[in-house]
Length: 334
Image (cartoon, rainbow, N blue to C red; front, side, top):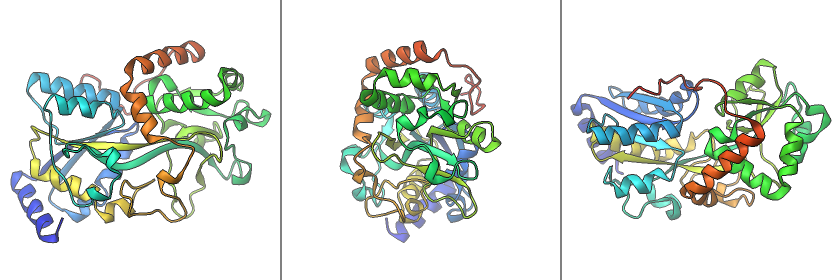
């Protein structure tokens, strides 16, 4: 999008009343800063409100608002990629093709431009290198069975997060349920949310996880490290976004989507960008890693019967999910 076109959208967005409401999939309130940072500086006067909550709660809110006819949301980007074809079929989305969309893998772009990938998230090994030096950190699934890691592992319940569920599904496909039983014997601490293990590791209560997201290139002085396995599966997917058809602030929504796919925002990605013409120093493009499968995750998410069966199996092995919603958002809030 040309500078003039972007400026025109900005002026139209301000004329709408300067508001913008975004539902963002996530599991910690502070993750909202990933979406306000940069945008607020680039477009002062746009009052952006980002609500971070588990994607499986956001999608229900959007469906319920549609049923009631009181939609208040402009943009949604969530992990539940299965929702977007449904929402399109139901007429809930409006097409918009921002500049840079031609650089996104077309396999993750709706042909009509109603939804598309905005960035890549991945879950894998995270340790505090002040506690476990990087060269001693667990990388592969079998590493988590080491005796020195007993009582030192923290993991997200797989039956509470479909992305973690798929990660477990793929690891078990290679190592079998015997691996899971041995992992349980390590007495891992099970928590809700993929950000929670980072806080637990930061507190010193536990030392390692493989179910969390972290910066590919952390800030200087940060001792936490995101470490990919060399052989085993790690979970990565294209976080998908869309503008709702009844968006109260359509110009602001288009401005936001244009910014999210801009070179500036893509280069500032915490992990991988969606655009193929933007690279993160020190890391390969996501499609060059052979031990992850964003397309496989999308297919998994579309097969809801498979997801539900696997959730039941994980609950039987691990036990029911315990704990409050890690985002603190009230489930009854609309």
